[in-house]
Image (cartoon, rainbow over the protein chains, first blue to last red):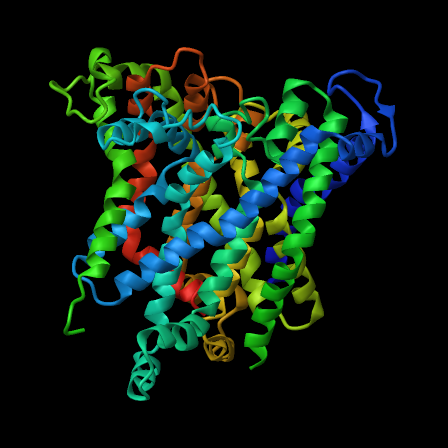
Length: 289
Length: 268
């Protein structure tokens, strides 16, 4: 007996919970259906066409792209900065490490509740601090203004997810042999050169993990938006996932919602597939060598 | 490092203030009476535990549900991931690579895509609004990531160990249970922590697949009373902090193992 029989359970789960529902979603997206009644009306590509022409849907797609750019740059950049600072032999390193990582352990709904209180327009911490230091004019209706609500949400996500990027980079830095850095120092390289020419390239395995998971998270972003604003005000902070939820379970338009899901899958596929291919090949390479 | 520049400390301490402020404010708010609530920067004049009592009355049951969901679901998902990763790490040939690639593809699926059929499947199985239903769903959707993680971790265990064990007459099953799993405790505990966080913190599956206190986890309950019209921040902050405790505690207790597991799995 081969050990491949261990694959039976995972593959069955995969078929039942990934393959079947995805095919089913495609099927639903070609219909008009309220989720309850017996008759599903075939509409072909109608749902896709409606969405394609709809400003509300465009807005959600643009927001998703903004989240992708944010996720790739902000938590990763800040996490790298913090990791580099701690790696240079700072005292109380253990304490700093715990503090930077702590927010990552908080559930999305808790992040939402805490930051709704932080952003509260009259008594919230941010407005209070701005008033105290005499910058009260900068205070905004952080979550109520359609023009800034997405940026406010990004602020809370930055607080929430930086810790993970930080910890992966920190672990990666610890894996770099000291000799590499010392050799560069002897050659007379400046710290700036050492970082970009030696440390950063050697950190590539960590970078690829952080960026890949960030892209996946950006496509999945749902919990934090739903729990903070439910996509509001007036759909301003909607992404595809929250719009889909609202259309499916709020308006009971399962066909239209499934079409959003298909768009989301296609966009995620185009963006993330190269990464998956790279990852599965990388493991194969390391085996052969 | 002999010289200690001051700039890293300034940045680090500044970041500590930014990172801790929301948690400190939430903790302070949770201990204030309603009349003091608007004084954000002031310490509570007396500790007002009434908020915690009221929060527990509203979410206590769901907190227990969260524990009942997360514990077994973490175990099952790690078990299934390990079972999938083992043959994929040691199987030669195209078949193994293809299966691995297909499983990894599951990682790019935003879970909202399967939401509607999943709701119908779970209802059809009779598992709607039940705790075992949540175990099943969390285990199934963890397959790609857990397989990926353990497969990567197993790749750090030398191939020669596998070959030597088989020559010594160890069966392929014996190798997994007696040698590979004991040699992978760092990876397994790191994965356990990651999975606990995912499952404990989940909101999407919770609001799709549960609708009563019978199975509803704490996250769904908090989302429920946070979105009410009249938000009472005192009890809400108390409930929030209660929901934060288990995962935070797990990370603090096992953070050494977590960092070691990340080094083994991701640092390769």
